[in-house]
Image 1 (cartoon, helix red, strand yellow):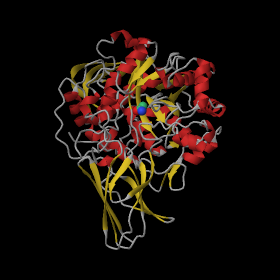
Image 2: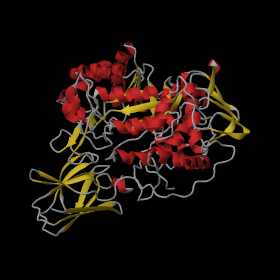
Image 3: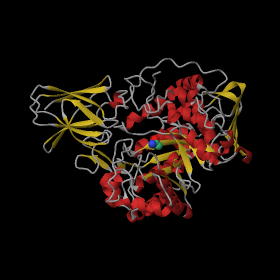
Image 4: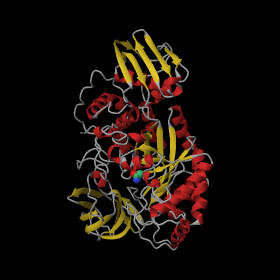
Length: 611
Ligand code: ACM
Protein backbone atom coordinates (compact mmCIF):
# COMPACT_ATOMS: atom_id res chain seq x y z
CA UNK A 1 0.00 0.00 0.00
CA UNK A 2 1.19 3.48 -0.74
CA UNK A 3 -0.07 6.45 1.23
CA UNK A 4 0.84 10.04 0.53
CA UNK A 5 0.44 13.09 2.72
CA UNK A 6 1.14 16.73 2.03
CA UNK A 7 0.38 19.70 4.28
CA UNK A 8 0.91 23.41 3.81
CA UNK A 9 -0.09 26.71 5.33
CA UNK A 10 -2.92 28.34 3.40
CA UNK A 11 -3.56 31.78 4.87
CA UNK A 12 -4.65 31.23 8.46
CA UNK A 13 -5.55 27.62 7.66
CA UNK A 14 -3.73 24.34 7.08
CA UNK A 15 -4.45 22.44 3.88
CA UNK A 16 -3.84 18.66 3.98
CA UNK A 17 -3.92 16.16 1.12
CA UNK A 18 -4.08 12.44 1.87
CA UNK A 19 -3.65 10.03 -1.03
CA UNK A 20 -3.99 6.25 -1.26
CA UNK A 21 -3.52 3.62 -3.97
CA UNK A 22 -6.00 1.25 -2.26
CA UNK A 23 -9.57 1.78 -1.11
CA UNK A 24 -9.71 2.83 2.56
CA UNK A 25 -13.10 2.42 4.24
CA UNK A 26 -13.88 5.02 6.96
CA UNK A 27 -10.32 6.02 7.86
CA UNK A 28 -9.69 8.19 10.90
CA UNK A 29 -6.95 10.79 10.46
CA UNK A 30 -4.94 11.16 13.71
CA UNK A 31 -2.37 13.94 14.12
CA UNK A 32 -1.31 16.80 16.32
CA UNK A 33 -0.83 20.52 15.88
CA UNK A 34 0.96 23.05 18.05
CA UNK A 35 -2.48 24.20 19.32
CA UNK A 36 -5.96 22.65 19.44
CA UNK A 37 -7.21 21.96 15.89
CA UNK A 38 -10.63 22.52 14.35
CA UNK A 39 -11.88 21.07 11.06
CA UNK A 40 -13.05 23.48 8.38
CA UNK A 41 -13.91 20.90 5.71
CA UNK A 42 -13.18 17.37 4.57
CA UNK A 43 -13.89 15.44 7.77
CA UNK A 44 -15.56 15.36 11.16
CA UNK A 45 -13.69 15.97 14.41
CA UNK A 46 -14.36 12.96 16.67
CA UNK A 47 -11.79 13.44 19.45
CA UNK A 48 -9.45 16.16 20.64
CA UNK A 49 -6.94 16.22 23.48
CA UNK A 50 -5.02 19.49 23.57
CA UNK A 51 -3.29 19.74 20.16
CA UNK A 52 -4.05 16.11 19.25
CA UNK A 53 -7.10 15.33 17.12
CA UNK A 54 -8.88 12.47 15.39
CA UNK A 55 -10.88 13.33 12.28
CA UNK A 56 -13.27 10.86 10.63
CA UNK A 57 -12.77 10.96 6.86
CA UNK A 58 -15.15 9.66 4.20
CA UNK A 59 -14.32 6.35 2.48
CA UNK A 60 -11.31 6.92 0.24
CA UNK A 61 -11.23 5.27 -3.19
CA UNK A 62 -8.08 3.84 -4.75
CA UNK A 63 -6.17 6.66 -6.42
CA UNK A 64 -8.08 9.34 -4.52
CA UNK A 65 -6.42 12.39 -3.02
CA UNK A 66 -8.61 13.67 -0.21
CA UNK A 67 -8.43 17.29 0.82
CA UNK A 68 -8.90 18.31 4.43
CA UNK A 69 -8.83 21.91 5.65
CA UNK A 70 -7.86 22.59 9.27
CA UNK A 71 -7.50 25.68 11.42
CA UNK A 72 -6.78 26.32 15.08
CA UNK A 73 -9.78 26.22 17.40
CA UNK A 74 -8.48 29.43 18.96
CA UNK A 75 -8.22 31.94 16.10
CA UNK A 76 -5.50 33.86 17.98
CA UNK A 77 -3.05 31.11 16.99
CA UNK A 78 -1.96 31.43 13.40
CA UNK A 79 0.15 28.73 11.76
CA UNK A 80 3.53 30.40 11.38
CA UNK A 81 5.87 27.91 9.75
CA UNK A 82 6.36 24.20 8.97
CA UNK A 83 6.48 23.27 12.67
CA UNK A 84 2.80 24.27 12.85
CA UNK A 85 1.72 21.65 10.29
CA UNK A 86 0.35 18.25 11.40
CA UNK A 87 2.97 16.12 13.16
CA UNK A 88 2.91 12.40 13.90
CA UNK A 89 0.07 11.86 11.43
CA UNK A 90 -1.41 8.40 10.81
CA UNK A 91 -4.62 6.75 9.67
CA UNK A 92 -6.60 4.42 11.88
CA UNK A 93 -8.58 1.73 10.04
CA UNK A 94 -10.54 -0.32 12.50
CA UNK A 95 -7.82 -1.78 14.75
CA UNK A 96 -4.95 -1.03 12.39
CA UNK A 97 -2.82 2.08 12.27
CA UNK A 98 -1.02 3.15 9.12
CA UNK A 99 1.69 5.79 9.48
CA UNK A 100 1.57 8.69 7.04
CA UNK A 101 4.79 10.23 5.77
CA UNK A 102 5.56 13.70 7.13
CA UNK A 103 3.38 16.31 5.42
CA UNK A 104 6.43 18.49 4.80
CA UNK A 105 10.14 18.46 5.67
CA UNK A 106 10.68 18.07 9.40
CA UNK A 107 13.09 20.24 11.31
CA UNK A 108 14.96 23.40 10.61
CA UNK A 109 16.67 23.76 7.25
CA UNK A 110 20.19 24.78 8.07
CA UNK A 111 20.65 26.91 4.97
CA UNK A 112 23.91 28.12 3.48
CA UNK A 113 23.58 31.45 5.23
CA UNK A 114 25.27 34.74 4.51
CA UNK A 115 29.02 35.11 5.06
CA UNK A 116 29.67 35.97 8.69
CA UNK A 117 31.14 39.43 9.25
CA UNK A 118 34.83 39.52 10.14
CA UNK A 119 35.71 39.38 13.80
CA UNK A 120 37.17 42.64 15.12
CA UNK A 121 40.94 42.40 15.52
CA UNK A 122 40.73 43.17 19.25
CA UNK A 123 38.55 40.12 19.91
CA UNK A 124 39.64 36.56 20.46
CA UNK A 125 37.67 33.94 18.54
CA UNK A 126 36.31 32.72 21.85
CA UNK A 127 32.82 32.49 23.40
CA UNK A 128 32.30 33.79 25.96
CA UNK A 129 34.81 36.63 25.51
CA UNK A 130 37.20 36.80 28.46
CA UNK A 131 36.74 39.53 31.03
CA UNK A 132 40.01 41.04 29.91
CA UNK A 133 42.39 40.33 27.03
CA UNK A 134 45.70 42.12 26.55
CA UNK A 135 47.48 41.10 23.36
CA UNK A 136 51.27 41.26 23.56
CA UNK A 137 52.03 40.40 19.93
CA UNK A 138 53.24 37.25 18.25
CA UNK A 139 51.88 33.72 18.43
CA UNK A 140 52.63 30.45 20.17
CA UNK A 141 52.36 27.21 18.22
CA UNK A 142 50.16 24.94 20.32
CA UNK A 143 49.16 21.33 19.75
CA UNK A 144 48.66 19.86 23.23
CA UNK A 145 49.46 20.21 26.92
CA UNK A 146 51.74 17.90 28.83
CA UNK A 147 49.82 15.63 31.25
CA UNK A 148 48.45 17.66 34.16
CA UNK A 149 46.26 16.61 37.07
CA UNK A 150 42.86 18.32 37.01
CA UNK A 151 42.42 18.32 33.23
CA UNK A 152 41.05 14.77 32.87
CA UNK A 153 37.54 16.04 32.07
CA UNK A 154 38.97 18.35 29.40
CA UNK A 155 41.02 15.54 27.85
CA UNK A 156 37.95 13.31 27.59
CA UNK A 157 35.86 16.18 26.21
CA UNK A 158 38.40 16.81 23.45
CA UNK A 159 38.54 13.15 22.53
CA UNK A 160 34.75 12.67 22.46
CA UNK A 161 34.29 15.85 20.44
CA UNK A 162 36.56 14.66 17.67
CA UNK A 163 39.38 17.11 18.37
CA UNK A 164 43.05 16.10 18.44
CA UNK A 165 44.19 15.14 21.95
CA UNK A 166 44.58 18.19 24.19
CA UNK A 167 46.79 16.28 26.62
CA UNK A 168 49.70 14.40 25.11
CA UNK A 169 53.21 13.35 26.13
CA UNK A 170 55.62 15.97 24.82
CA UNK A 171 52.94 18.67 24.96
CA UNK A 172 53.59 22.15 26.32
CA UNK A 173 53.91 22.45 30.08
CA UNK A 174 51.23 24.55 31.73
CA UNK A 175 52.69 26.11 34.86
CA UNK A 176 49.89 26.43 37.45
CA UNK A 177 49.74 28.64 40.52
CA UNK A 178 46.84 29.52 42.83
CA UNK A 179 45.20 32.83 43.70
CA UNK A 180 41.98 32.45 45.67
CA UNK A 181 41.09 36.06 44.80
CA UNK A 182 40.15 34.83 41.31
CA UNK A 183 37.19 32.88 42.72
CA UNK A 184 36.49 29.22 42.07
CA UNK A 185 35.83 29.66 38.35
CA UNK A 186 38.36 32.34 37.50
CA UNK A 187 41.78 32.07 35.88
CA UNK A 188 44.56 34.25 34.50
CA UNK A 189 46.26 32.71 31.49
CA UNK A 190 49.49 33.96 30.00
CA UNK A 191 50.34 32.93 26.46
CA UNK A 192 53.92 33.87 25.62
CA UNK A 193 56.30 32.84 22.83
CA UNK A 194 58.19 30.96 25.54
CA UNK A 195 55.18 28.99 26.82
CA UNK A 196 52.03 28.92 28.93
CA UNK A 197 51.26 29.68 32.54
CA UNK A 198 48.04 30.03 34.47
CA UNK A 199 46.91 31.33 37.84
CA UNK A 200 43.67 29.75 38.98
CA UNK A 201 41.20 30.34 41.76
CA UNK A 202 40.25 26.68 42.01
CA UNK A 203 39.79 23.39 40.15
CA UNK A 204 37.01 24.79 37.94
CA UNK A 205 39.19 27.77 36.98
CA UNK A 206 41.90 25.37 35.79
CA UNK A 207 39.33 23.39 33.79
CA UNK A 208 38.03 26.61 32.19
CA UNK A 209 41.56 27.73 31.33
CA UNK A 210 41.89 24.38 29.57
CA UNK A 211 38.61 24.93 27.71
CA UNK A 212 39.93 28.31 26.55
CA UNK A 213 43.16 26.74 25.28
CA UNK A 214 41.29 23.94 23.50
CA UNK A 215 38.91 26.42 21.86
CA UNK A 216 41.62 28.85 20.77
CA UNK A 217 43.67 25.99 19.36
CA UNK A 218 40.68 25.10 17.15
CA UNK A 219 39.57 28.62 16.21
CA UNK A 220 43.13 29.96 15.68
CA UNK A 221 44.44 27.03 13.67
CA UNK A 222 46.99 25.96 16.28
CA UNK A 223 48.67 29.38 16.56
CA UNK A 224 47.63 31.00 19.84
CA UNK A 225 47.83 34.79 19.95
CA UNK A 226 50.23 35.84 22.72
CA UNK A 227 48.95 37.93 25.58
CA UNK A 228 47.22 37.77 28.93
CA UNK A 229 43.64 36.59 29.53
CA UNK A 230 42.01 37.44 32.86
CA UNK A 231 38.66 35.73 33.13
CA UNK A 232 35.89 35.38 35.68
CA UNK A 233 32.17 34.92 35.03
CA UNK A 234 29.61 37.64 35.70
CA UNK A 235 27.04 35.11 36.95
CA UNK A 236 27.19 31.84 38.83
CA UNK A 237 24.15 30.39 37.00
CA UNK A 238 24.76 29.81 33.30
CA UNK A 239 22.15 27.33 32.28
CA UNK A 240 20.62 25.33 29.48
CA UNK A 241 17.22 23.69 29.92
CA UNK A 242 15.95 20.73 27.90
CA UNK A 243 12.33 19.59 27.75
CA UNK A 244 12.56 15.81 27.77
CA UNK A 245 8.85 15.34 28.48
CA UNK A 246 7.29 16.46 25.21
CA UNK A 247 10.08 14.77 23.29
CA UNK A 248 12.05 11.93 24.82
CA UNK A 249 15.66 12.85 24.12
CA UNK A 250 18.05 9.91 24.17
CA UNK A 251 20.76 9.90 26.82
CA UNK A 252 23.40 10.20 24.12
CA UNK A 253 21.90 13.50 22.95
CA UNK A 254 21.88 14.80 26.52
CA UNK A 255 25.55 13.83 26.92
CA UNK A 256 26.41 15.65 23.68
CA UNK A 257 24.51 18.71 24.90
CA UNK A 258 26.54 18.67 28.12
CA UNK A 259 29.73 18.55 26.04
CA UNK A 260 28.59 21.54 23.99
CA UNK A 261 27.68 23.44 27.15
CA UNK A 262 31.11 22.69 28.60
CA UNK A 263 32.82 24.16 25.54
CA UNK A 264 30.98 27.42 26.31
CA UNK A 265 31.53 27.36 30.10
CA UNK A 266 27.84 26.83 30.81
CA UNK A 267 27.43 25.17 34.18
CA UNK A 268 23.77 24.32 34.89
CA UNK A 269 21.67 21.70 33.08
CA UNK A 270 17.96 22.07 33.84
CA UNK A 271 16.43 18.67 33.10
CA UNK A 272 12.68 19.02 32.49
CA UNK A 273 11.54 15.51 33.34
CA UNK A 274 7.77 15.72 33.52
CA UNK A 275 4.95 17.54 31.80
CA UNK A 276 1.42 16.93 30.57
CA UNK A 277 2.57 14.37 28.05
CA UNK A 278 4.89 12.19 30.14
CA UNK A 279 6.73 11.51 33.37
CA UNK A 280 10.18 10.32 32.35
CA UNK A 281 12.05 9.37 35.50
CA UNK A 282 11.95 5.77 36.73
CA UNK A 283 11.15 6.61 40.34
CA UNK A 284 10.62 3.82 42.84
CA UNK A 285 8.07 5.67 44.94
CA UNK A 286 5.55 5.83 42.07
CA UNK A 287 6.40 3.32 39.33
CA UNK A 288 2.91 3.64 37.85
CA UNK A 289 3.64 7.21 36.99
CA UNK A 290 6.35 6.53 34.44
CA UNK A 291 5.22 3.05 33.50
CA UNK A 292 1.86 4.44 32.36
CA UNK A 293 2.92 7.73 30.81
CA UNK A 294 6.42 7.25 29.41
CA UNK A 295 4.91 6.26 26.06
CA UNK A 296 2.03 8.04 24.40
CA UNK A 297 -0.05 7.20 21.35
CA UNK A 298 -2.53 4.47 20.43
CA UNK A 299 -3.86 2.59 23.44
CA UNK A 300 -1.81 4.71 25.88
CA UNK A 301 -3.20 7.00 28.58
CA UNK A 302 -2.04 10.04 26.66
CA UNK A 303 -2.63 10.06 22.88
CA UNK A 304 -0.07 11.28 20.36
CA UNK A 305 -0.06 14.94 21.44
CA UNK A 306 2.81 17.01 20.02
CA UNK A 307 3.92 14.64 17.31
CA UNK A 308 3.69 11.49 19.40
CA UNK A 309 2.23 9.61 16.42
CA UNK A 310 1.25 5.95 16.79
CA UNK A 311 3.57 5.44 19.76
CA UNK A 312 6.59 7.35 21.05
CA UNK A 313 8.43 7.87 24.29
CA UNK A 314 10.76 6.38 26.85
CA UNK A 315 11.92 6.84 30.41
CA UNK A 316 15.26 7.38 32.11
CA UNK A 317 16.51 4.61 34.39
CA UNK A 318 18.53 5.45 37.45
CA UNK A 319 21.58 4.00 35.70
CA UNK A 320 21.03 6.46 32.84
CA UNK A 321 20.66 9.32 35.29
CA UNK A 322 23.96 8.22 36.80
CA UNK A 323 25.59 8.43 33.34
CA UNK A 324 24.31 11.97 32.88
CA UNK A 325 25.48 12.95 36.37
CA UNK A 326 28.94 11.47 35.85
CA UNK A 327 29.38 13.37 32.59
CA UNK A 328 28.08 16.58 34.15
CA UNK A 329 30.45 16.26 37.10
CA UNK A 330 33.46 15.76 34.85
CA UNK A 331 32.46 18.94 32.98
CA UNK A 332 31.79 21.06 36.11
CA UNK A 333 28.05 21.16 35.40
CA UNK A 334 25.34 20.81 38.04
CA UNK A 335 22.06 19.13 37.12
CA UNK A 336 18.72 20.57 38.26
CA UNK A 337 15.83 18.09 37.94
CA UNK A 338 12.33 19.44 37.37
CA UNK A 339 9.10 17.70 38.36
CA UNK A 340 6.10 19.83 37.31
CA UNK A 341 3.33 20.56 39.80
CA UNK A 342 0.54 21.39 40.18
CA UNK A 343 -0.29 22.06 36.48
CA UNK A 344 1.28 20.51 33.38
CA UNK A 345 0.27 17.20 34.97
CA UNK A 346 -2.23 15.69 32.52
CA UNK A 347 -0.38 12.37 32.31
CA UNK A 348 0.12 12.30 36.07
CA UNK A 349 -3.60 12.64 36.83
CA UNK A 350 -4.44 10.06 34.17
CA UNK A 351 -2.02 7.61 35.78
CA UNK A 352 -3.00 8.51 39.35
CA UNK A 353 -6.66 9.63 39.27
CA UNK A 354 -6.70 10.00 43.06
CA UNK A 355 -4.80 13.27 42.57
CA UNK A 356 -7.99 14.88 41.20
CA UNK A 357 -11.10 15.79 43.15
CA UNK A 358 -13.84 13.40 41.88
CA UNK A 359 -16.34 16.19 42.56
CA UNK A 360 -14.46 18.72 40.41
CA UNK A 361 -16.76 19.72 37.57
CA UNK A 362 -14.51 22.55 36.32
CA UNK A 363 -13.72 22.81 32.62
CA UNK A 364 -10.80 25.22 32.86
CA UNK A 365 -8.39 24.73 29.99
CA UNK A 366 -4.62 25.05 30.01
CA UNK A 367 -2.83 27.16 27.38
CA UNK A 368 -2.11 23.92 25.55
CA UNK A 369 -5.82 23.00 25.61
CA UNK A 370 -5.95 20.35 28.36
CA UNK A 371 -8.99 20.47 30.61
CA UNK A 372 -7.62 18.14 33.29
CA UNK A 373 -3.95 18.86 33.82
CA UNK A 374 -3.68 19.96 37.44
CA UNK A 375 -3.27 17.94 40.63
CA UNK A 376 -5.52 18.85 43.52
CA UNK A 377 -3.97 20.11 46.77
CA UNK A 378 -7.07 19.16 48.77
CA UNK A 379 -6.71 15.45 48.05
CA UNK A 380 -4.72 13.51 50.69
CA UNK A 381 -3.41 11.28 47.86
CA UNK A 382 -1.69 14.30 46.31
CA UNK A 383 0.52 14.67 49.37
CA UNK A 384 1.02 10.93 49.76
CA UNK A 385 2.41 10.94 46.21
CA UNK A 386 4.20 14.29 45.91
CA UNK A 387 6.15 14.36 49.16
CA UNK A 388 7.99 11.03 48.76
CA UNK A 389 8.27 11.56 45.01
CA UNK A 390 9.96 14.96 45.20
CA UNK A 391 12.23 13.74 48.00
CA UNK A 392 13.27 10.72 45.96
CA UNK A 393 14.05 12.89 42.94
CA UNK A 394 15.90 15.52 44.98
CA UNK A 395 18.00 12.81 46.62
CA UNK A 396 19.00 11.39 43.25
CA UNK A 397 20.70 14.62 42.14
CA UNK A 398 23.75 15.78 44.09
CA UNK A 399 23.12 19.46 43.27
CA UNK A 400 20.78 19.64 46.26
CA UNK A 401 18.06 21.56 44.44
CA UNK A 402 14.77 20.49 42.84
CA UNK A 403 12.57 22.53 40.49
CA UNK A 404 8.85 22.16 41.19
CA UNK A 405 7.43 23.72 38.03
CA UNK A 406 4.45 25.96 38.91
CA UNK A 407 3.99 27.56 35.50
CA UNK A 408 0.80 28.06 33.57
CA UNK A 409 -1.87 26.83 35.95
CA UNK A 410 -5.08 27.14 33.92
CA UNK A 411 -7.12 30.26 34.57
CA UNK A 412 -9.74 29.38 37.21
CA UNK A 413 -7.91 26.22 38.27
CA UNK A 414 -9.85 24.16 40.83
CA UNK A 415 -12.86 26.51 40.72
CA UNK A 416 -15.07 23.44 40.23
CA UNK A 417 -13.54 21.50 43.13
CA UNK A 418 -15.62 21.41 46.33
CA UNK A 419 -12.61 20.05 48.22
CA UNK A 420 -10.50 23.04 47.19
CA UNK A 421 -13.33 25.43 48.08
CA UNK A 422 -13.32 23.99 51.61
CA UNK A 423 -9.53 24.13 51.84
CA UNK A 424 -9.48 27.76 50.65
CA UNK A 425 -12.08 28.72 53.27
CA UNK A 426 -10.05 26.99 55.96
CA UNK A 427 -6.76 28.63 54.95
CA UNK A 428 -8.11 32.10 54.10
CA UNK A 429 -7.38 31.79 50.39
CA UNK A 430 -9.45 33.21 47.55
CA UNK A 431 -7.90 32.82 44.12
CA UNK A 432 -6.24 29.97 42.22
CA UNK A 433 -2.94 31.81 42.64
CA UNK A 434 -3.45 31.86 46.41
CA UNK A 435 -4.15 28.13 46.35
CA UNK A 436 -1.14 27.32 44.18
CA UNK A 437 1.13 29.49 46.35
CA UNK A 438 -0.09 27.73 49.51
CA UNK A 439 0.47 24.33 47.93
CA UNK A 440 3.97 25.13 46.71
CA UNK A 441 4.97 26.62 50.06
CA UNK A 442 3.82 23.45 51.82
CA UNK A 443 5.69 21.18 49.42
CA UNK A 444 8.77 23.40 49.50
CA UNK A 445 8.93 23.66 53.27
CA UNK A 446 9.05 19.86 53.60
CA UNK A 447 11.93 19.70 51.15
CA UNK A 448 13.79 22.63 52.69
CA UNK A 449 13.44 21.09 56.15
CA UNK A 450 15.29 18.06 54.81
CA UNK A 451 18.12 20.17 53.43
CA UNK A 452 17.20 20.73 49.79
CA UNK A 453 16.74 24.04 48.02
CA UNK A 454 13.72 24.50 45.79
CA UNK A 455 13.27 26.29 42.48
CA UNK A 456 10.23 27.10 40.34
CA UNK A 457 8.98 29.19 37.42
CA UNK A 458 8.01 32.81 38.08
CA UNK A 459 4.32 32.06 38.81
CA UNK A 460 5.34 30.40 42.07
CA UNK A 461 5.76 33.87 43.64
CA UNK A 462 2.03 34.58 43.29
CA UNK A 463 -0.53 34.24 46.07
CA UNK A 464 -1.85 36.19 49.01
CA UNK A 465 0.44 34.41 51.45
CA UNK A 466 3.58 35.14 49.43
CA UNK A 467 3.67 32.13 47.17
CA UNK A 468 6.30 29.44 47.42
CA UNK A 469 8.63 31.35 49.78
CA UNK A 470 11.25 29.11 51.40
CA UNK A 471 14.15 30.83 49.66
CA UNK A 472 13.07 29.44 46.29
CA UNK A 473 15.11 30.28 43.22
CA UNK A 474 12.68 31.57 40.59
CA UNK A 475 12.95 31.50 36.81
CA UNK A 476 11.64 34.56 34.99
CA UNK A 477 10.39 33.35 31.60
CA UNK A 478 7.54 35.50 30.26
CA UNK A 479 9.91 38.44 30.33
CA UNK A 480 12.16 40.02 32.94
CA UNK A 481 9.50 41.99 34.85
CA UNK A 482 8.30 39.05 36.96
CA UNK A 483 11.91 38.27 37.84
CA UNK A 484 12.57 41.83 38.95
CA UNK A 485 9.40 41.77 41.05
CA UNK A 486 10.33 38.43 42.64
CA UNK A 487 13.86 39.68 43.34
CA UNK A 488 12.44 42.75 45.09
CA UNK A 489 10.43 40.37 47.26
CA UNK A 490 13.59 38.57 48.28
CA UNK A 491 13.93 35.76 45.76
CA UNK A 492 17.06 34.90 43.86
CA UNK A 493 16.22 34.83 40.18
CA UNK A 494 17.45 33.23 36.98
CA UNK A 495 16.57 35.29 33.91
CA UNK A 496 15.36 33.23 30.96
CA UNK A 497 13.06 35.65 29.12
CA UNK A 498 11.46 33.88 26.19
CA UNK A 499 12.05 36.89 23.92
CA UNK A 500 15.82 36.34 24.16
CA UNK A 501 16.43 32.90 25.65
CA UNK A 502 13.78 30.47 24.34
CA UNK A 503 15.41 28.37 21.68
CA UNK A 504 12.13 26.73 20.69
CA UNK A 505 11.04 30.06 19.21
CA UNK A 506 11.71 30.29 15.48
CA UNK A 507 14.83 32.19 14.43
CA UNK A 508 12.81 34.31 11.96
CA UNK A 509 9.25 34.92 10.79
CA UNK A 510 9.88 33.09 7.50
CA UNK A 511 7.15 30.49 6.81
CA UNK A 512 9.84 28.02 5.84
CA UNK A 513 11.51 28.38 9.25
CA UNK A 514 10.74 26.08 12.19
CA UNK A 515 9.56 26.76 15.70
CA UNK A 516 7.14 28.49 18.02
CA UNK A 517 6.28 32.16 17.87
CA UNK A 518 4.25 33.16 20.93
CA UNK A 519 6.91 35.58 22.18
CA UNK A 520 8.14 36.67 18.78
CA UNK A 521 11.18 35.39 16.93
CA UNK A 522 14.69 34.99 18.29
CA UNK A 523 17.43 35.65 15.76
CA UNK A 524 20.96 35.15 17.08
CA UNK A 525 21.34 38.90 17.73
CA UNK A 526 18.46 38.93 20.20
CA UNK A 527 20.20 36.42 22.45
CA UNK A 528 22.73 39.12 23.38
CA UNK A 529 20.74 42.33 22.98
CA UNK A 530 19.40 42.40 26.55
CA UNK A 531 20.76 42.69 30.05
CA UNK A 532 20.03 40.15 32.78
CA UNK A 533 19.92 43.14 35.15
CA UNK A 534 17.51 45.41 33.29
CA UNK A 535 17.80 49.19 33.31
CA UNK A 536 16.12 50.63 36.39
CA UNK A 537 16.52 47.38 38.34
CA UNK A 538 20.14 47.84 39.42
CA UNK A 539 18.95 47.58 43.03
CA UNK A 540 18.27 43.86 42.63
CA UNK A 541 21.51 43.01 40.79
CA UNK A 542 22.80 40.87 43.68
CA UNK A 543 19.63 38.76 43.44
CA UNK A 544 20.16 37.87 39.78
CA UNK A 545 21.76 34.44 39.98
CA UNK A 546 22.27 34.30 36.24
CA UNK A 547 20.76 33.37 32.92
CA UNK A 548 19.43 30.32 31.19
CA UNK A 549 18.31 29.24 27.75
CA UNK A 550 15.30 26.93 27.46
CA UNK A 551 14.45 24.43 24.76
CA UNK A 552 10.87 23.16 24.78
CA UNK A 553 10.11 20.07 22.74
CA UNK A 554 6.52 20.45 21.55
CA UNK A 555 7.34 20.12 17.86
CA UNK A 556 10.44 17.97 18.14
CA UNK A 557 10.00 14.43 16.87
CA UNK A 558 13.67 13.46 16.60
CA UNK A 559 16.65 14.52 18.70
CA UNK A 560 18.58 16.12 15.83
CA UNK A 561 15.86 18.69 15.26
CA UNK A 562 16.89 20.47 18.47
CA UNK A 563 20.46 21.06 17.29
CA UNK A 564 19.83 23.87 14.82
CA UNK A 565 17.47 25.52 17.30
CA UNK A 566 20.15 25.51 19.99
CA UNK A 567 23.10 26.46 17.79
CA UNK A 568 24.35 29.01 17.21
CA UNK A 569 22.02 30.75 19.68
CA UNK A 570 23.65 28.97 22.64
CA UNK A 571 26.67 31.23 21.97
CA UNK A 572 24.53 34.21 22.93
CA UNK A 573 23.40 32.73 26.22
CA UNK A 574 26.93 31.70 27.13
CA UNK A 575 27.91 35.30 26.42
CA UNK A 576 25.17 36.75 28.63
CA UNK A 577 26.00 34.42 31.50
CA UNK A 578 29.72 35.16 31.55
CA UNK A 579 30.59 38.55 30.10
CA UNK A 580 30.28 42.01 31.64
CA UNK A 581 27.22 43.92 30.40
CA UNK A 582 27.42 45.19 26.84
CA UNK A 583 30.66 43.49 25.85
CA UNK A 584 29.29 41.61 22.83
CA UNK A 585 26.56 43.10 20.65
CA UNK A 586 24.52 41.57 17.84
CA UNK A 587 27.12 42.22 15.14
CA UNK A 588 29.91 40.76 17.29
CA UNK A 589 27.99 37.59 18.17
CA UNK A 590 27.24 37.11 14.46
CA UNK A 591 31.00 37.35 13.76
CA UNK A 592 31.77 34.97 16.62
CA UNK A 593 29.19 32.51 15.29
CA UNK A 594 31.12 32.58 12.03
CA UNK A 595 34.35 31.80 13.88
CA UNK A 596 32.61 28.91 15.64
CA UNK A 597 31.14 27.42 12.45
CA UNK A 598 34.02 24.98 11.84
CA UNK A 599 33.97 24.04 15.54
CA UNK A 600 30.27 23.13 15.38
CA UNK A 601 31.00 21.15 12.23
CA UNK A 602 33.88 19.36 13.90
CA UNK A 603 31.77 18.20 16.84
CA UNK A 604 28.96 17.26 14.46
CA UNK A 605 26.39 19.69 15.85
CA UNK A 606 23.93 21.14 13.31
CA UNK A 607 23.57 24.91 13.33
CA UNK A 608 21.17 27.36 11.79
CA UNK A 609 22.87 29.58 9.26
CA UNK A 610 19.97 31.66 8.02
CA UNK A 611 19.54 35.32 8.68
C1 ACM B 1 7.22 27.91 30.41
O1 ACM B 1 7.75 28.21 29.34
N1 ACM B 1 5.95 27.56 30.46
C2 ACM B 1 7.97 27.93 31.67
